[in-house]
Image (cartoon, rainbow, N blue to C red):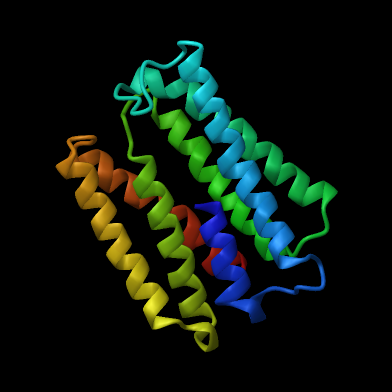
Length: 188
């Protein structure tokens, strides 16, 4: 999801960011590697070493360690973006919002098996909606409608696959949407 969010900000709302800070493709590649490839490899290693039984992580207890590691990766990436790299503040806000969502997801995993998929896609939809409302000149109806359709499809898929109960899907949606919409509407 961070790669999707950064891609949206770079290519569909380019007036919102100052591209003098970075090379777009390098930043997108860096985000992809640090928030997708490295966590994916760590989960693969957890599976190979027996720390998790399956990639589905069907129980909430099995999700705590992988989500904790992913939270750590996201915190490190946010730290480097904020202190070490000179990138546009809107990207730091995006990464910080996503990191807060992942940390909250990890914390709630002790009690419920909240849908990480819904937190991610609703966070993306919230950022698109907040940017569209706050900056009407960047409004992209097709992007907003596409994100709404994706939220519906992913939520339905999580329920149809019996991966989550409705409460877990709705709570995932509410968390991702509230954090990302609030941060982009009030701080961007």
